[in-house]
Image 1 (cartoon, one colour):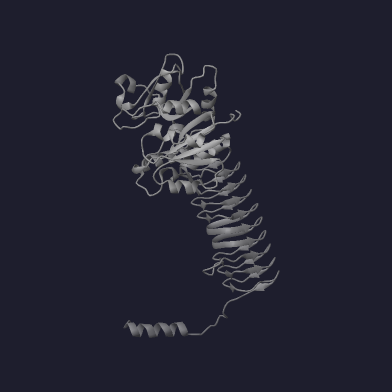
Image 2 (cartoon, one colour):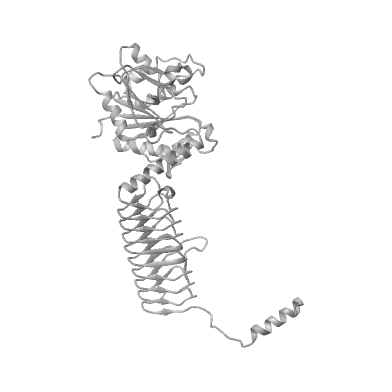
Length: 454
């Protein structure tokens, strides 16, 4: 499906989100490691929206900071909370001079798909010219959503009714209003100017534009999306439920694309996680943002990976932590209880256990012994460690950066290395071992006497 020509988007994000009980603005709470608002904005950006207006209220400074640098996105202020219809009107000035289609969406409803939004725009432009296209869905639990009542045999809306005003027969209808709609800018703002607030809350409700359009002889229609697309977040419980729903969908998508998940329900993805074919993910693996895993890699149980690129044939874990800036080249191996940050391991390099590698370049087929650490931070600055191809670092070594270990060099176990080591050189930096015969037995006797032990 091709991107529709010239359209704009209004995103309503002025709600206070009091049920979240949080100092963080509701639309900035993450799902799959990415703010809810960012999920939606990325979707409309991919569609090619000409302008996006985010309507803000309380806590707008947080959202404005999060929007910094997003091309084509502006904000409008709803200083007083007077309902969704009033909120959309606040975007009118930002859309001045534009009379094409406008999609009205919600910042706390992050997963409406590009395909569905494009269907809304296409339906708006069809020959019967409905004026308004409402997005509806049929969730398993319709709760207290407003109901969309269709005319028999088509998609025309006979009426829309809030749950509290609906009859028992209307409440039995499962087609629910998502709040999202499409209309042409000029008509939308004309109709919004005509809706009233004669209701219990004294607010201007966006769905009332459907009634106004009816009165002018238009025939608004509804299209149906998946319940997942129209699910919104008003509480921590709903946030957790939507996260779980997203994760389940992503797990099955990974399986369908050729990855092996030993225990799918225990693997957690980020929005941008990339998995290659025939890679294997063992139980209880967590992917933070920015992870790319190539074909055939193996991620063993209880590993946490973020901001890392893992090449074909690599093995990670179990119990490994890969932090941002980690790059594993073909066949590299990170073992149990190894942590890396801004570290590149060349092809076939290994750090099998109990190691920290930070700000490091590890050459191909180098072997990093257990307990090795790169001392990369002096409390003020970070410094690099470079280990050459084929080098061998003995167990329990401390490499004090900045330092370079040459190709093929060997560092003896237990060394604290503070100077560069040349290629093929052996470096041993530890105190000389001494033996004092009989000292241990004499020590024990003295201590027994002190303690009064016979």
